[in-house]
Length: 339
Ligand code: EPU
Image 1: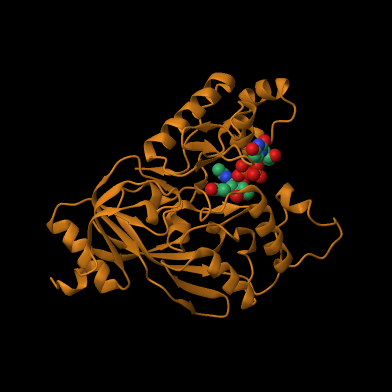
Image 2: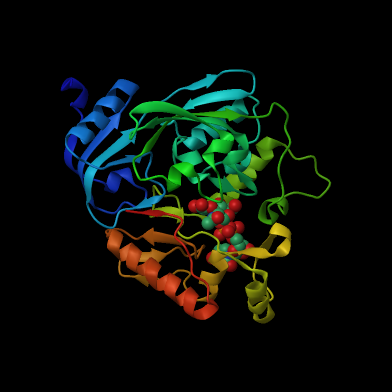
């Protein structure tokens, strides 16, 4: 094994700068890899030393509640290659929002609703990122990964990725098994905005001819007004998923709460409810527990006011979900990966 390639290995690495929550936990080892040979050597090092592997992109959807005893690999593979007029092959380490800007500048459309989502391109299919009526799965052609169990590169076509709401085969697999290397996206060369999300649609007149550029700016505006910038205050966006409940349960809740935001699914047998609304009704918006808290403008976003530990944030999240269970009989599931 080439020692030179492991030269940027850090032992007892503080993780606060590597996650958007900014909590101070440590990893036994951490390494940033810029190319495939460096990645393979890092994985070999973990295998030889019986270390668990975990990959981080920009750490925008993870909460460390204790020190990580294995090897954290930060994937910095870059590059945007236009394989055909509408097909892009993108390195996992590219910044997601920069990609969105790149596509619009090159007259490729579809990603505008997903503007300003923090994170890397490699993380996008794992989490099946979504916002304002669009999820990335509709654009995924193929995901290229390194399978650390089989020690070989594999390609997953869109159907094989088994995408679901904020979920995929990669997220369900054992942690560290698949390392996303590149993502291939099929975009559109015609501008056809998606305005199904009410908060977005209400920004435009019903008969207006809206462009992708306008959608992009509207989405950036809404996000900036509602969600805290992780560079200013530590957070990981929505902490919980929006819960899916039976129509029967929904009826019971809506009898007492006419204003509950809900979206019917599967012919109306199930409803997806707003977790933010449930938490807001339970009085959580803007509350603090020591150095951890809930954002003033959005009850679904937990924040680190500076110096909170992962445990502080986790305990607050538990208190929040118990109160929703108690008040509405609904068990919230975390959207953020808790390690
Ligand atoms: N609401 C409240 N109180 C609040 C915040 C919101 O009652 O404090 C109500 C709003 O009035 C609205 C409803 O809740 O009727 C939904 O709120 P919002 O439009 O902000 O969306 P969300 O359901 O809370 C989801 C995603 C976001 C995504 C937005 C826009 C999940 C868990 N979250 O949030 O994704 O940006 O929709 O599509 O699905 C993320 O995944 O980290 C994330 C931020």
